[in-house]
Amino acid sequence: MTLYCIDYIGNLIDVNNFTKKELNYLPEIIQDNESILAFTSGLMGGNTWLITLTDRRVIFLDKGMIYGLKQEAIPLNRVNAVSGSTGIILGKIVITDGAKDREITNVWKKTVKIFTNKCQEAIDAINHPQPQSAPPAEEDPYIKLEKLTSLKEKGILSDDEFEKEKKKILG
Image 1 (cartoon, rainbow, N blue to C red):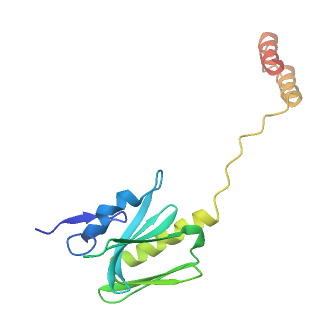
Image 2 (cartoon, rainbow, N blue to C red; image 1 turned 45 degrees about the vertical axis):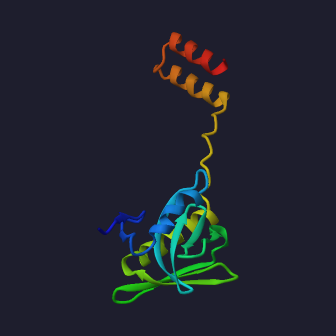
Image 3 (cartoon, rainbow, N blue to C red; image 1 turned 30 degrees about the vertical axis):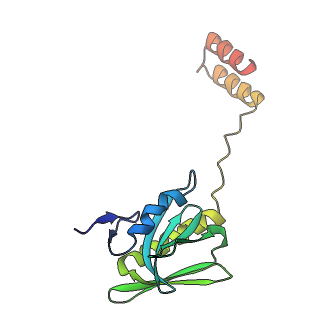
């Protein structure tokens, strides 16, 4: 029986043949409040690796047959470039962190573009955070009183309404 799962970017993965062992370790590797954005798998250094993109880092996991778990991570603020290329069926992703190029080959073609785009979006979000919108500045009470007086003079507000609103403004 073949076991399939849907990855975080909507693609079908045959976890029996590729990264089932690595997927089992992923929950132990993810930190508190860290969100998985995408993952894929491919060959790097002759071994099959699970490559996981989170909102903080890119994680590389390889659970060898004999050896233990190999884990590498690159914080997103250290990733300089992400690129991808595709062939007929498979593709390649290259992640550069300034010190090293990590070339992942034999990546499913349909995951290459989506993974590299999501990675670039996450890098942009880390390196160029959106400014927090400031709460609206409270209007000067004197300006509010002038507007209130103008409404009263135009006959829009009665004397009672004017006095109630004036008390609200002055506290």
